[in-house]
Amino acid sequence: MRPALIAGGLAVLASTALALPASADSWENAAFYAGTDLTGTKHSVDLANKQCVNTTPAKSAVNISAADIEVFFNADCQKGSPGKPSDLYYVLGSLHQGNFPFPAVSYRVR
Image (cartoon, rainbow, N blue to C red):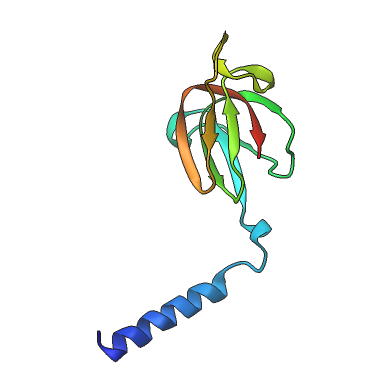
């Protein structure tokens, strides 16, 4: 590799690092959306709340945080497909987004 390319790449990397927030908390966020593909009404997630939260039905979500979010298709964080108990639930991992197979109606931050 040419020295000019390496120096240019290092300069871009250094300027990007300087632009990052000082605290990870300032950029972490998560939200549920009424529609698929992060469309429709947005409902923010309180990442500090580790309790079960019932929410309005959501078809997609984004998680830009260090936490995982357990997503349930029944109220009160009950596993199963809508109205049918089973082991089914969804984990929206850290730094992920997704569409749900059923509307999500409750969640818990882990």
